[in-house]
Image (cartoon, rainbow, N blue to C red; front, side, top):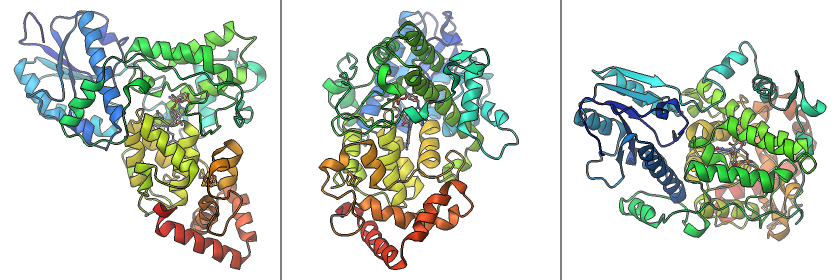
Length: 518
Ligand SMILES: Cc1cc2nc3c(=O)[nH]c(=O)nc-3n(C[C@H](O)[C@H](O)[C@H](O)COP(=O)(O)OP(=O)(O)OC[C@H]3O[C@@H](n4cnc5c(N)ncnc54)[C@H](O)[C@@H]3O)c2cc1C
Ligand code: SF4
């Protein structure tokens, strides 16, 4: 680090997902402050991450360092291969505090419980003053959702979403929703059948990332997935993140809502924004994202329908903020929930994509190749199968936490344990997201080129989802006895003659005894 005086400095820590250049910390240059950033094994190894995820994080962090230095700030940056790197947060902090004879320490609120705890404990043992400040990123505080639902039995997303629309005056006409409706979800369920045309995905111009990848490999970090620099999807700077957002507005927003739930063998992105990495690293602010989208809609009203825009902003001001609120309300116990008492291991094919089930093969292949899958692949293909296969939520969490570039625990675990695996017993989702082949076929074309028959329940070529679905309902029915939203499914289960159900359960048992054979 270049500085006139490197002693008696104030040290401020920036974590890898705190790349918010508009934070008030960076407004003015203060020569008595040194910002600390570090690439550490603690973070590369707490889960087995996708290689592209680590490259993306380190690449974005390195760009952020450059931006800070260009603005005149002083930065102490430890690369993974720096010989003075202790590879864990506390030892590195102790070292730099000592080296700079620090007079104070400050950090920004981490979004993950484990880092929050680690930094709190670290500061408890400090002999110099310290401060904790907000990241100025989210649209709600950590406790706002808890306060909003105070005294309520259920935390219904829709109510929270309406509160957010009003609070930020987004798509509102006085106190009423623009278009007379809060939610256009029912419009957003189209299957994509080759039209409308899907533009090629936005590819940020990545600098040479091979050296970074090589450094990670040389360090011996265990990763998953593949890396192809020419198809690297992730913006690594704020400028690229803004370009990605503009690209979304100009090319994808027009059909976002309509095809939000669609699935297709040849289309990884469909009309999705892929903005989650930029958002979760805080290179871009959620309010800035939704305001840009709404502004674009206002100037292009003849071409873009309100339902497309509403569908998008609901994800960000609704689901994203809601999940964060649930995380801080429920942690740390949330990470131990297993309401359905599932115990099976995750099939090996989740790490290899080697399965004959086409929907799973395609969704996992995409994930391994790009560290990305869109929401319905995550929820209704990989998540659905893991739940039907009654996999232990710890194993499911570990997979989702590692494989996606946007996976940070606060948003991963609430989606996985809560929305997808119903491990929280219904805090996030009022009923489990499970389906047989019929939903998968309704929303996409995977079944058309699958060697299993989507309509068959029994027989060697019967789609495994079908027997697993009824088996799951039968195995877990006691957990749903008082759940009104499950009543129809359970009535259908009851109508299956016992001898047929027995056959279905035998087929399911065969699949579950060795899912990697299917
Ligand atoms: C099992 C499972 C695990 C998931 N893990 C993650 C994760 O680790 N990190 C993550 O950011 N999202 C996660 N999601 C939510 C969602 O799938 C991703 O945010 C989305 O697929 C990212 O792609 P996109 O940017 O193209 O999204 P788009 O479809 O374009 O949506 C726009 C934005 O809305 C937000 N959003 C949409 N749905 C959700 C949601 N359910 N929860 C929170 N934010 C949402 C995201 O910020 C997203 O970038 C998970 C969903 C499931 C079912
Ligand atoms: S038939 Fe079954 S396994 Fe094959 S793609 Fe359809 S749902 Fe998936």
